Image (cartoon, rainbow, N blue to C red; front, side, top):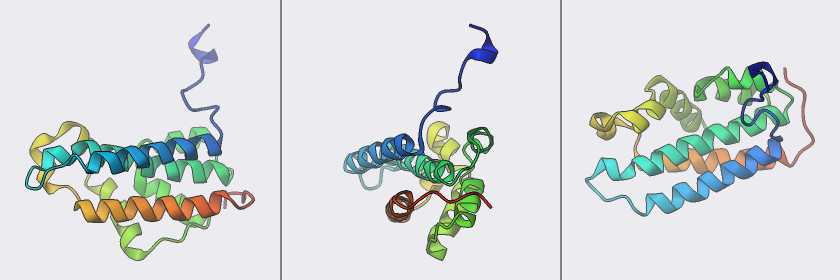
Length: 153
């Protein structure tokens, strides 16, 4: 098999499969949150990583559900700001605080900080804000995923 014939992991996944995966990461994040200890920011890193990844998966599932090209979505890499912009254009309605938080997650590179920057753990989003963002994205994407797909704008 040549490299050209190999599929990118997730390339053939349906929007529903990605939504189900996002749900599992959200559930895992909630379990990991219980393991964190006050005053010990590093103990929250596994929660943060799972929560941010779940948010990314929810937005990806929604974009695919709305007809976006999987290759174009993948080119966004871990840019939650770009995913959010496209999701909002596709009909996702988020509270202003949530939309702003998603932009700040990208701007502050929290995905990378969480994975590789233990010295920056204390500078990341507040746990309550990240939890609220995760839960709002999950709830609102679920509603839109139940509707017939829209075509991208």
